[in-house]
Length: 149
Image (cartoon, rainbow, N blue to C red):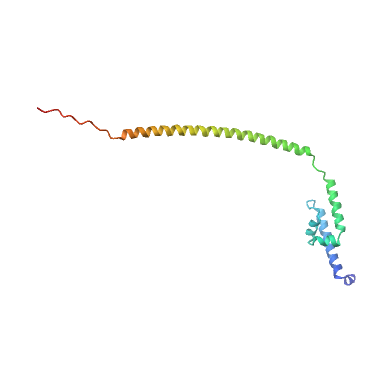
């Protein structure tokens, strides 16, 4: 009978509170969830304004959980990152050296090929000139006939 006496607004608030409670519990189970008002509202399927206007206790709970998560998971010491970065730098320096060696080899091959092509073009031009010279008609001297007595 208490439900019949409550107003529609009270029933809506109670339904929203139930949705928020379920969403809040789901967010607690998964550490991957971001603990924000927007994430809680999205998980509950309600608007953020409903949390700010009628359910401010969840704001405090979110803030305390966020602080607790930050305290539990200290940041990784920078030494690990530094070692990883130094290894990556060393690997990249070695790759750069290898690429420079490969590029030098390719450049040498290219220059050699260009020089060879130039020599072959010169030889081809010489052979074409010689062929043209050989194909020119040759004028034969007139044949002299012995005089007949």
